[in-house]
Image (cartoon, rainbow, N blue to C red; front, side, top):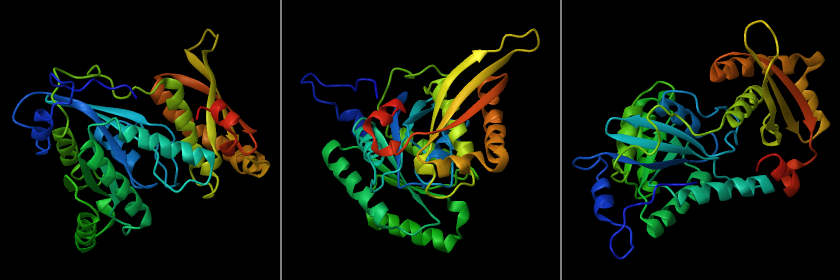
Length: 330
């Protein structure tokens, strides 16, 4: 991930003056701030939903299924006083496949190149071994890089005040965090507080790092593929999300004399014939539902009508095959 070069002293070391000022979490005294924040947490901790809530537009797909996010997605939040570039990573987890190992490596590499980390811990779930594992990794990061970590108690709308208080105490005991902020991305509760606190740890900048009207730097094909995968994940069995990969073959204008229309051709890959049958459904009914749901999102993204051509293909055991992983973009 490319990133703006931090301010450095005459000896080449990173200047700590601005950093220590930002550690107060309130943006320092004056001046513009801009930089990168990474949201981490175990799968289904609310990272993608919070990213979308902060940006104010859907830039990351969401699902109740684990391992929904496969790519680091930048959501860009620009305010008069700051620009926060959010990097939404896959959930850290104990890997079972080569894909899982690569996703974990992606998270760790991202953590080394951001200004602040948001550690998402869902309020409707008890602190578990997965949270403790991530907390340990983040503690090492704080020691090695002095990167501030803000603990975010997500999904507060799903619990009462007593349960939330218990959760906040458990989070406090889990590590020495720069701040703890409860929030609900779906309800919008305290999302502005999350933005204010994360932005307060960004370094000073002469101006925004991205144009003010840009909300994400994800290319169009990637966003189309993610919208299709989100629709395909809805309602499927727990084991199937790990086996789904989506590749956009082409997006081309349709030659006609009527209203402008795009032909969007997309391949959905699974690992076994039985999974292919699940995605297609009886008489193609399930695939039609996927197409209808995905089409709405893609048309909103592209701003015009499309014809969505979905093809389901089998790539046997692609999660464990280095060549197929590369072919599918991992």
